[in-house]
Length: 603
Image (spheres, rainbow, N blue to C red):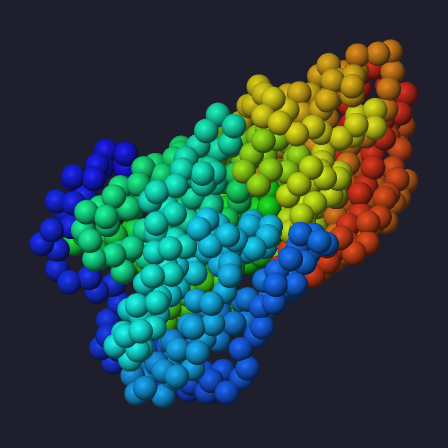
């Protein structure tokens, strides 16, 4: 499916004669019956409390805190609190339809319309000029929020407020999307590839237009522009549906793609179907193929090992694309409406809850993403405690890039033992020139070598080559040349990393080999393992973790010296701080060429 084949005239023809746009029912009897009284009663109790609570203030000083200090949480947390109050109130009114919550909905909607910026401080940096609003993730989500709340509550809202809502969504979202070309996320350029932003921003703008735009010519222009932009977004996935942004951003970016797929299908009578494509079917299975074991995923890039996949997203995709494994990823319905930045997900969870199930999918024996160079191996998929390995080749200019060529993750007994720690705390420096000073984004935070004191370097040229992948009954193997991941000053002429996931021994094992060649007569070479667990160094082994989940790392003490380096309280985004220990295996007496070989077995 080439989304760029659509043009304004064709889309305009499709929009004519389409049945009434009804993406969600106004008769909610079936939804109420499916939800049950307990979930509805809890929502109503919280909504009644929200109706009496003061609206969180969003002060200019709070917005400008990011510009002045680099911290973004103060404004974002208060903004999220304000939004979630409105989400609960809107859902309660939609399900009850008695008018009890209308006044509170109008108060909060009015407050949102009065906000100077809908964009997050980290993206706009300062307060917007009225004639040039910033159209970022948060602004786009806000536009769709308000459009969907307007649809659900409808004539319960005053005509004046509904008119103001339409005016503001047009001024801040639809018109900037349609008329401006300065949005970096609109299309891929030689300087920058699009990413999750494209799906989120297009879904917000085009989705809001599906609800609010009455001029079919203008709606056709908006939809066509969005389809062409999404064509670039789909090109960020590899041929197996993989994304270098990782599972967390699959949930966010592709999730919003699916939100728009639903709305466009409803608005065009199914004639524009964003899900009807073989690649999209592959993309839809990404969380199924990147699960390490029950409840744990590969945490490469700015992703985490315990991502949350929205129940409404999984339920809708499983039904529409006949992919039942998506409903068995261990996610549970939670109707509390907490922690959301957009209304799309609590609304769709209430409309499309996951079926009740006790089965939890833990992956198959092996998954391979050839274009990205990701391998995931599982010793016994039926045993969630069995040994698991995820490893990546790749390069250092990926989406949400971290300098992590050669990074790998080992899990045992359902616990991450050797980690890729995922995303650090989002701050001005984390997305600025100092990004790779942060251990989470630099190669220091990953289980990859340090050569003559040098870490890996940023850029597409700094990547893996000669990637060889093998899968056999006895072992899964991945090897690659990764010297180019390091700067020239490292003095590295070759670095061959190979990992073998050995299935032939009881309990499995991972064999790591780093074979290096330095430009000079000698130098310093360290292979590194990164763990959040306790480390004990023995004569020829290193014990990491414990009997509840750990590994024993064997090494040759005549060829390797072992030290540790501890980093306490490393800040993460949306998660508690973590303690990391780097276990350093320094090559001894091997001159300009040598090998560090480690044998990693579960405890």
